[in-house]
Length: 79
Length: 148
Image (cartoon, rainbow over the protein chains, first blue to last red):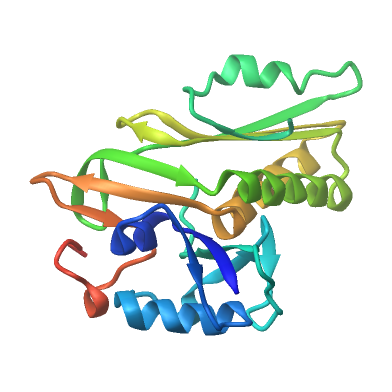
């Protein structure tokens, strides 16, 4: 499956990219983050993040499909 | 757009104009300013960034929730992104209502929800060139750049 991933804030800094498209066997955001965290040594644990699929919040165990755009959302700090 | 992510400086006079209605007897506005200190550190510059499509969607939901929950007439909010200097307006919230009670309550509700739900991030630059992502880093997971 091919996914587009957009990075923000600390994750963008740690990945060194604002977005990438990659092939993955992952079928849920949870699996995808697990894989990326291992590969890039992200400091943020999944439990402190939220996830968005195709521009809206999604469940970690939602099924993701080829071409989906995934954003892992670090703890927010607006205001 | 009732909730807006803005690359441009926020003008409270202009923004307040969007709330005016003959039926309103109260207007409550809140301005969040960038301050020069946080957690004992001197802050020299702040950078705000947002995941804009979702930030505007979630922000609009919060305003809609406020309109349903409180007896108010209008609710609007703008949040700045980009590099801000000390004293700049980072966020503006405005509510108009028939009476002051619901206007105060709704304004408080909106800013509290925005701070906890909308995908906006803040990076502070401290004296000495060190930076930190607010709410993202702690001494336990630091990678050399976090002063907290």
